[in-house]
Length: 151
Image (cartoon, rainbow, N blue to C red; front, side):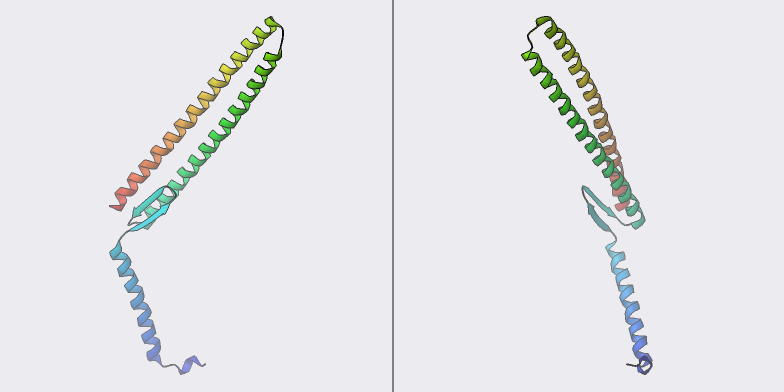
């Protein structure tokens, strides 16, 4: 098929149709005016696409930081469980022991170990909880900013 034999009026009408279609899409998108995106726990409504992209990126960073904090909490809990199993084994050994003075010393040592483990555990859990609260506050600030942009 030879393109040169196609009349110019066809090319003009095709160009006009493409331009009309593009203008139509622009008008429809302008009149709809807002974009709504959902991503995990985040729902964003906006009219400004650049602000939307920036907000989504910030929200993604916060969500990944939250996921990291939760993973750290899982590691801390696993470590605590492991330490408690060690204490359980030591108690079982003490129950099998026969000498009273040695048993009292061992119990005193074991109690101090347990107290140290609990203090360390409580501090780590409190730190992770504070980090999660800070991240939640940041996320709420970004959501409020986004709502202001969307209105």
